[in-house]
Amino acid sequence: MPRRDLPSRPLSEEERHLWQQITAEVQPLHAPLKATTPAPMLPRRPMLHPAAVPLPLRPVPPPQEAIDPQMKRRLRRGVLTPEARLDLHGLNTEAAFAQLAQFIERCARTDKRFVLVITGKGPEGRGKLREAFPRWLDVAPLSQLVQAFEPAQPRDGGSGAFYVKLRRLKD
Image (cartoon, rainbow, N blue to C red; front, side):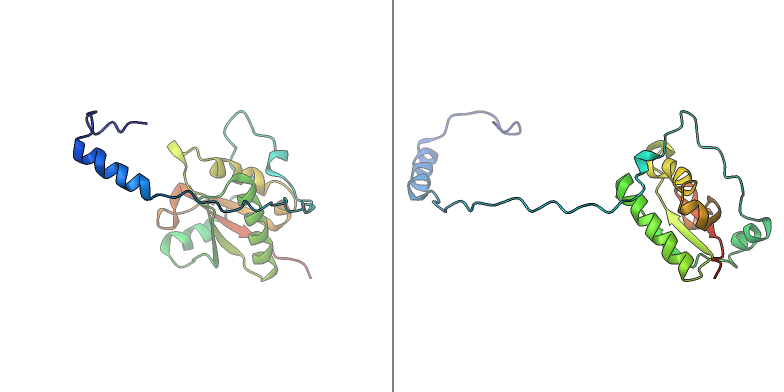
């Protein structure tokens, strides 16, 4: 494929001679090709697949239960900060869902009540992770662990992040 940034011209006698010298010294590699066998497929653990959650044809409605007003006030003032953070940037939906499920479960088991999940905004504020996030929280087992969620304050990521309030686990 010719380079478009250089004008097409014939090689000079000196360039042609140099090229012949270089190519005369080149020897092809005769390395034997290793026969590779494909690795055996491991059985996948059963896990809720994000594709199992139907995509709505309209924007996702706000959560049924929002974070309480006192907690919102403490957030605005900077008195309350998330106890843990998860950044899902750069992940596909399947990997992001798996990471989110593990993160929420781990936080709930370690008695964390308030966490931050960063999904990113996506192009024009319509990122796949951002739009899928509310649906993921509506599905078990996450729906049993999450009490409320809503978009974060600008200092914590704004509309590209969510505060998540976790339920207390019963002993």
